[in-house]
Length: 211
Image 1 (tube, rainbow, N blue to C red):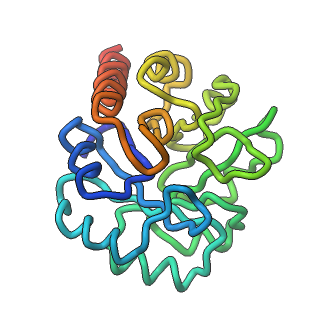
Image 2 (spheres, one colour):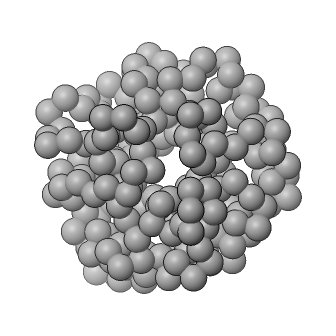
């Protein structure tokens, strides 16, 4: 298992999943939030997952979804992690042993109660009034750095190949997550951007591990 986590999120096609694998990413994300521009039907996600299983971690993104539906999709697609990107309460999230809880960060972390959640990791993304992620916005990375004491932190929000090295050096997270920063359009990835992002992220993580 890799000591760090590099996720290409919002995958909607088999070709883009293979692209992420070949670039060296450690995870891909399928967005099961029906209002997302990167939504993928669970049946289609299963078809892709069945062809790449064992080559990369597979994450399912859910927003305020019924727990039974999450379990059904998780079992069908055989998700490595379930990522909760909505307003899910601790008692809901803690039912899942493979959970990643996402928080949209505004100006502080004072209303984020990490200790209430028993998760594999926390994902920090930029706050947006209307969107549950994938906005391409950044936030104050020093807040994410402070959060390291609460568990494994995955940094998201406005990352791309040009700033991911600085992001990793500043925050020292366990992982990074990118979607819009490596896209041609929502749901369609750019091979060159994906490759550059993963190479830069890997190099930054490897350097940090040598220190």
